[in-house]
Image (tube, rainbow, N blue to C red; front, side, top):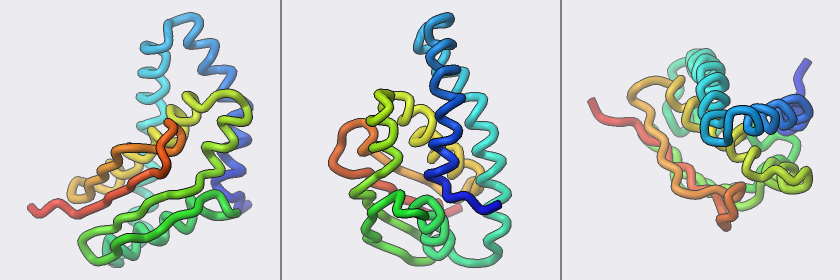
Length: 154
């Protein structure tokens, strides 16, 4: 079954948001969030590794363009590609239905924890030469998300 990522996120939120809130009440926000990042991070790294290998010998720009098509499926993201080549992929996300959803349910901070935090774990799964820099997100109130992927030179 092929469900767009935005719909998967909405389904997962039905379980994860109450669970994270309960953990925060019991353990404190800092400890609960650290546990959630650790637990989900490992899953996202594994997913990133599998996905990266499935992309074959395509260059970084082509691989990341493909990834963003998946992230944006079902009109989930508006974005502008600033640079796409063998060594880099730079994109600004200017509209985010993930952020709109989490704001609508009154949990934008959990949207950042459960959605945006996964970006770095996914990139770690892609492998050592792939580096992600992102300094801001719509989920945290910025005007756009600034994703900058590059291959580190050995």
